[in-house]
Length: 414
View (cartoon, rainbow, N blue to C red):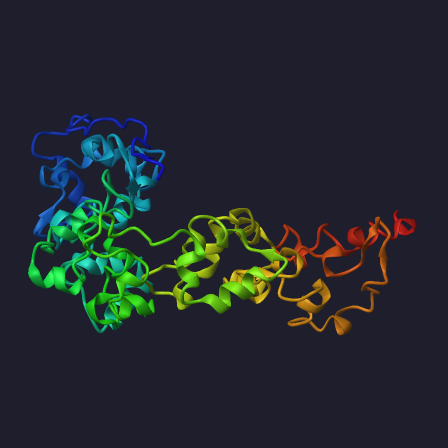
């Protein structure tokens, strides 16, 4: 994990108490004479220190400014001038709004009804941005107590120097703050395996789930049956958490037909063949995704094919299977006899699953039509379109249809 530098802002001027030489006792009063809405703000239970001390000019210029709201500098720079310690050093993860200096996304810079000048209380504030997660938490059958208590039980809202995902501590230390690994019931439910040395979220959804024990909603059968010994050594062995074998050899014990079929194809997806095998893409214990995928399919594929995912993001026209994260609509994730692990023998057959190309164009394509640009190639869909997108409409390689056509029909160039 690459560390995140927190020193992202230029040094801001120190909070100016009264650089504008306002009369004693008049600093806030002068402002409130025009900004009468502040009479109500000043009654709030939690006030920002400069406001409580009547130092409006600590953040605002009363005359002119280069920034909105007459701020003396960028809002993040102003906050850093007093809260410098929050921005020091490097972190393993940082909240995007914090890094971008958008402090007012969470805090009211003047006053609020909530501690730390938060614009909303507790987890309600986090769910404002993390709506999808909030909806899933609300629908869970089995809750995780810290989630109910509030997100900051486990996450630092600014940055974490200890762990990813803003966790206040790394696993399993964070989990062991609440769960006693020496407890008899804890050991029993985990079949006496030393899971206190493992990553808890390999099996459990920290935000709650619809499966008992807050296991992820899709559970690998050996885990559901508490048959850890199917893949791991005995809990009394010298390496109880180690796998019995490497790569897909462990998986082959149950999934023999699938593995045999994959290896019988002429082209095999390389993740199947290294020492990790199936677990390059699949979670071996439990997952919130179908087929025990480690995440949404486009994210799993994007771990290796980041350039393809990024190209689609930049593409002027979105190709639905990619935009919807359905890579397997066109490619076999395990193996294939076809180039690029395609699900069909030819590009024309593959595209025809969705596109009625005969009505799309009368242009000749197929195995008998030679590409004028290269006698070793035949004309097919990819001769004009790039399936993963381009910066031009309709996945074309060139900006206009005319420019595309004259690549072959050179006699029509003007």
